[in-house]
Image 1 (spheres, rainbow, N blue to C red):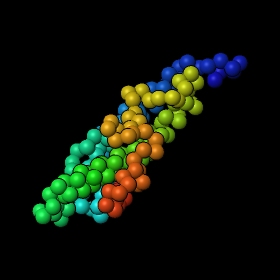
Image 2 (image 1 turned 60 degrees about the vertical axis):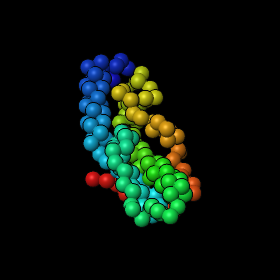
Image 3 (image 1 turned 30 degrees about the horizontal axis):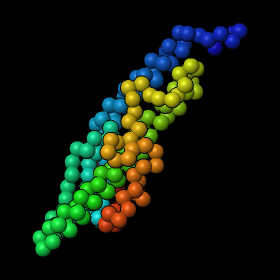
Image 4 (image 1 turned 45 degrees about the vertical axis):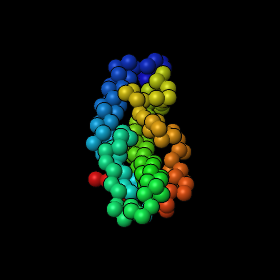
Length: 154
């Protein structure tokens, strides 16, 4: 602010440009990042990028019982959903880590921008997975055969 309480528009524009550059960098990093989620003690592993898109799925052959294909199919379906939810939770945590400080900067450092949303959109959830705050997570896959916590990817 300039003396007398007036906004310095040039300074405000420079701050906005700096935050925009940081946002683009964080979004690029999210698009390139991968996280993993597991279920069934590692029988199923889902890989998700930082934007929440499923990029890989691995099912251990030990998860398949050739003597009971119907039950196996149901169990695998449950494990796949649990692994994807676990990976989505990991991706949301990564998004919060990368974008959270920038979102706070939008609301506090630059008057008039609010802070209610991020330019370009930050996914708040993952379609078909319940998305949003508190969804999924460790308790979100109830009965999925001993879901294990995810491990950050490369």
